[in-house]
Length: 470
Image 1: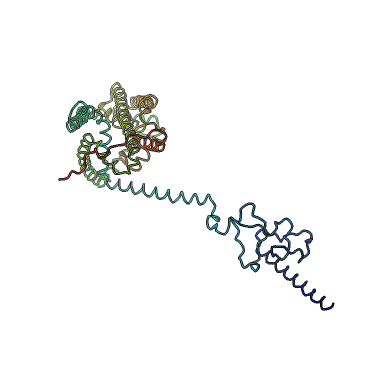
Image 2: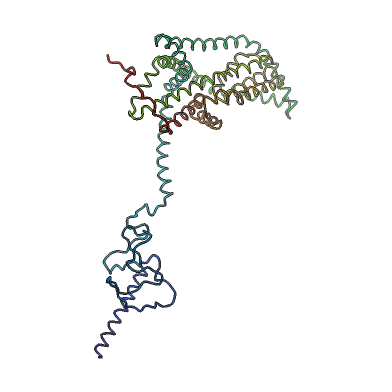
């Protein structure tokens, strides 16, 4: 009996030691602190109710699922079990990591929003880098690219006439050459008229400038707190500044001479390109579209057709708006007796090709000429004429003509012109709006290309070869 009591005591001490070890291990490896409760003592004594699954019979803490219970929320992955984590010594397996499972990896640690932001960021950086490289290449080849774009704009104005002549049986080369001559005749006639009227009115302008400056000086002295002596000092300082910067002006003149040479080269290249755009424009496009995959050629061709129709409508509407601005401001200046009416009207006509901004800037030049030639009262009336014509353009002509050709919000127009000025100067502002209009039309169609019937397939094999075999 004593021997049996000693054996039972040893076994009890062993079971208690094993229970303490398991509780300590569970306390170290349990992420949910199941064994850190501070309630009443466990009603189940240690070492009883051994399970049939080979467990040591230690029940889980109060409120915990039983060992081996199925995982109801899937937090441990397929085939996972719930309950307190097993001790490493029980089956030789390491405790499961917390999270979405043993194979969660970085995706389970990095938040979903951060991963999406990173994915978008590097793609956006690649797009910006590619766009920057494209702009750099365009700036490097500006002497070639600018004449080609000018020829494209002019061909949008002249191509319908060349196509009409070709439909009447004219040879394509003769029709293109005829329309090219018509365009050159119109431009040469405008330049000749402007130069002739400028030469004839320069003497009157020189005679009126002195009197106009005196009127301006008197108006400034009477209207602002400045004396005639202070105004004379300002004029003297301006003259001295011009004399001190003679070297800079001379170097600027040399730069202008180089620019004139580039302009002459660009004009010749633009005329040459314009002739072939009028003659073989469709064949050139069919050759280009043939370089793309066959499955996308029909959609690209239809997007290009819609963009081309938009460009033709834009150029026509812009010519009408510019003509109305030039005639309206020219009539107002003629009534006021401002000299150089025709050159100023021609300047307004050219400036109106830059929407919203160009016509107003050209009208400002006309107001300055009226100020120095006829005095401040005439200049104020001329300013009212310019503002009235701009209001007519913005509220009547722009919605009626350009609104049908270019469906772009006015804010987008202003932002596009500003970006064009920053990137390409005056020429960038000139092509900003038609570029945005064409990209808008093409992008809208391509994004919805599957909503309608498939467009007809282009026939690149019918295009004339760009390089003929000798």
